Length: 177
Image: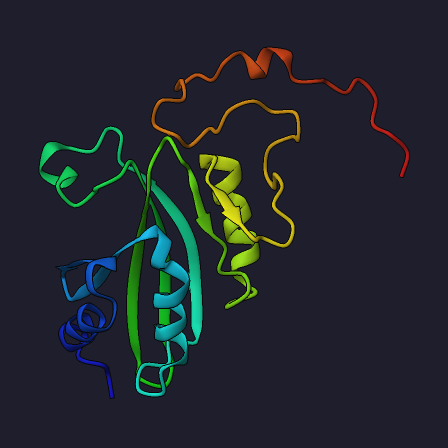
């Protein structure tokens, strides 16, 4: 039976107080909005509470709010939101959790200790947005070369890049396998 998410939000507020900013609901999809320093304890509670059982981390991604429309900016107390999409198979319920990360101190605790599947998602967010995941077992670039400067999915990154295409090494011969 699906979890009543409005009750879950009330319980989260009672349990974690000011670490929970609140929630949004759009087309029956709930998003719990939290402070970054509380991500481990709140996500652990969501995963391990016997009534909730959000045992499946579907995805870890990020939102850069730098150029969002004015009406959406009220939902973003910081520039970045690390987004965790969770699923409770036992309760047939989905929940999105957004942990807000400031631009000047772009770090958050890794949840790879809770869900091993977070490993690659956190590395992708690190590579594309520059958010550092403290305690990550192997935080390194996953899509871009190690010596690449910048983070291409940040909204202040130039649309046409910084000349990477012109300076990318070209192979004249195909190496023998």
